[in-house]
Structure formats: C-alpha cells, structure tokens
Length: 112
Image 1 (tube, one colour):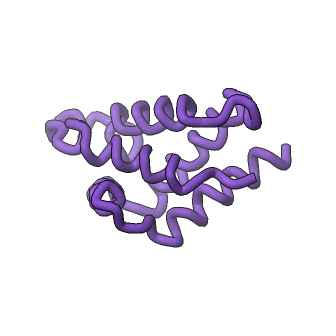
Image 2 (cartoon, helix red, strand yellow; image 1 turned 180 degrees about the horizontal axis):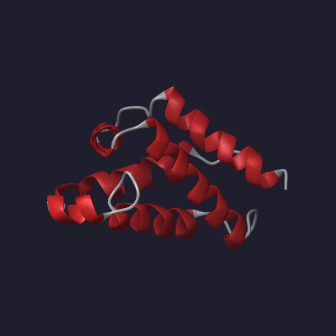
C-alpha cells in the first residue's frame, strides 16, 4: 500500500506555509517534542483527514501519521522540515529519505 506523494506534499506544505513556522521561542522551549506541538497536531490531523477511508481505516491512518511525524522529528530539525515543506510547496520533489520514512510507517502499520 502506498501513501501518495501528493498527500505527503500537501501535509508538508500545510505545515510549512502555516503560521506555525513562526511560533514564539517560548512556545518552542516549552514543547516536549522536537517540533512545536501545534505543528505536530496540524500534521497529524491533516494527514488523517487526507487518508482514503475506503482503503485505510481512520485508526490505521492515525497510526501511520503518528509514526511518520515521530520519525520525521528524529531525522529533520523543525527548520529543515519547514524548508522541505516550502520546497515541496514550490513544486519540488520531496527528498527520497522523507518518502522512505513515510513508506516505512505505512508498511509497519499495514502489517499489523
């Protein structure tokens, strides 16, 4: 099962172009994840909503989306994440590493 690159592009674009990229440093400092909590929340919510409920249950999508954002946080700083989102928003392809992360999450959730 493939999570389309359009979905990934949409998600990163939404996060990158939202006001979340200019959060006050205090909000970032108080966060317990590498990315601002609001960015994680927007990514996860949008990801689940963009899923195809005919082929993947919303619970499976939530697991895929949660896995994806957790792995992205381990791999990219928030600044890198937003830069990638901006690039994708300008029509550039997502880095292969990013696609691999999402595909690994899809494979992990779908084998359960």
